[in-house]
Amino acid sequence: MAIVTFLSDFGLSDQYVAAVKAKILGVNPNITIVDITHQISTCDISHAAYTLQSVFREFPKGTVHIVAVSPSGIHSKKYIAIKLEDHFFVGEDSGLFGIISKQAPIAMVDINKLSPIESTFDAKDILAPVAAKLASGGNIYEMGVELENITGFTPTIAKIEKPQIAGNIVHIDHFGNLITNIFKDEFQHIHKINKECPFEISFRKEKFTSFHQKVGEVGEGECFAFFNSDNRLEIGINQGNGSQLLGLRINNQVFINFKLEE
Figure: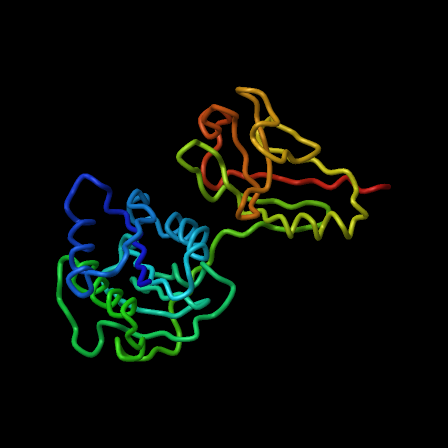
């Protein structure tokens, strides 16, 4: 099955999403198009990267992913197609594709180099046709000029300094839950080398000495902290907006302090 996913900051009140889909189906009407989301914050590359990174592996290998989110203040744009972890990605060379995986792409091409297209709607006129051709079995190297590298981007990462992990909130979801850049394997590694010593999770005035397994372990209006399905530390309020009620925003810090024996 030919699958193309579509992620953008276009919103849903205009015709833009439908126009891109129409272009794809014009190339191959048998393609299945799946919307990841079109509610990415405008020009927010970090938001787009987090969303794509969290979900693309759930799709079958060979899926093509269109990303139509352009960073602000960029006037000279380069559009690329890459093959990464047996998936294809088509979008602007903004640095986003450099942080969605720890692996390096095995193929990279500039898709608007051989026959440049001038357009006011790049997602429809440049990205969509290439995505449709890739989903239909096209060779990525026939889509453009081969590249040696793509733009890098440095995400906010947790600082691990014995006996503490200092992380940041990197995403706030629709429910107001706060997702951090502290990963389960990082915690387990530090915890293990410190002989599974006691620890404390702290943010604002909240403190926990253990993780919850699920939201339902706490009562309505109470705070929870657990490692979610992406193995990231997530914080929230059961049946409440954690961001608003806890006063936490993007980039605010979250700590895990390990209580070492004297």
